[in-house]
Image (cartoon, rainbow, N blue to C red; front, side):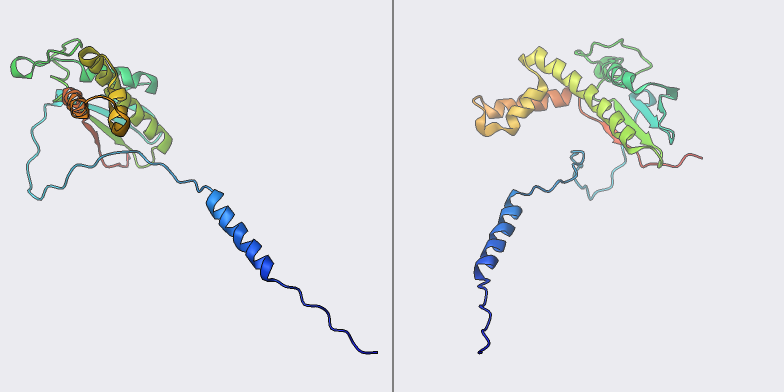
Length: 205
């Protein structure tokens, strides 16, 4: 009896199906990416310039040690109170003459900042500081600037600063005058410039 050869299986269609499945998974699969903190770096300046002199009272020092303790102006503070303390410093308005602030609503303490333009917040941390705590502290400081900017934007233009920035980012869908909107945003930024200095991490002994 003659031996019968087994029929061959056509694998061409299987290859097509595998290729289509591969394309399907490539199109539908989402890859998670780590999101960082949005910060605009200052432009590179080739000319070496001496930094302008700063009065000690115009610097608000915020320190996070290796244990996660928050020290503000050498005094321990809870993170929940940091935003209020930062706003009081930025909005103090203790300057006189040319350094006076006519829109500040603070206490006018001569021992605190002269005006928001001169005020600098210095954030310092230890190399062993927990990253989550560092980000939380940074966010509270940014909130202080944002709330003060919203206050002045509402006073001058009747709307939040954050809403104005959002409209400008989506200016293709904005119905108003984009140039005027940009000018108003820059005006508020000039009133409360975000001078948040982040010092290089140190290692406490």
